[in-house]
Image 1 (cartoon, rainbow, N blue to C red):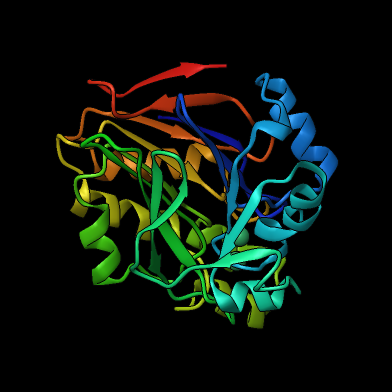
Image 2: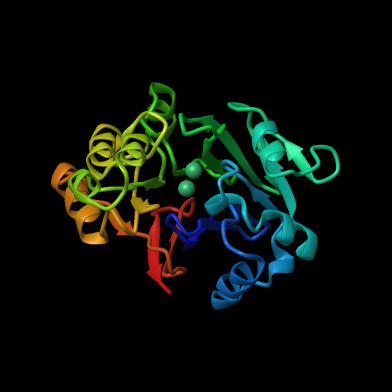
Length: 264
Ligand SMILES: [Zn+2]
Ligand SMILES: [Zn+2]
């Protein structure tokens, strides 16, 4: 399976999973035209996307889902709350999934939605299985890692996880106090330090690659997220990358022996 972030951050998120049999998007947080443009850059015809799996309803994850579904026919998968918030018809437009029940989203590709705490949304992270013995994870928008999530992340060959803000930049930055409290609270996002501490707890030899994603453009910078992570996981020898708003920039492979990465 090939994993490519088409872009990641507070202005939009979408991640493409590709196997020989299937193409699936995790989130569709760009306009229809942006999605087409970004897929076009890696030579993917939007009509060949089998499914879109939504983590939650926030604009930066769901804004392009309905239009993409209507234009290109990709099947939509979401939990009931996300479906309702996006105004989608749960019978005719959306296949509803439950947390912690594995969902077959395309031939040979299934996801396990794991609930995470986040701001008025029923957000889930995804543990992805493409029929090999290697799993991958894509998890963004959570206020704190739960024990359940930690158990599922352990042993994944690839982990894409948010590293949203630098605590100092957030504290000194332009946001009003109420928003600062929300971002750093249990319903907000993970700081660079929280993400790094989580990675230090879960990373082992089975994990070949990690992508830090959903960086705040105002309260973070790629070098801050990366250096914080490297500081805490210096014993881990896998590939660490940072995904930015303007992807796609690189892809990772899992499930064919050693995981590998190429720059696009
Ligand atoms: Zn969100
Ligand atoms: Zn988000």
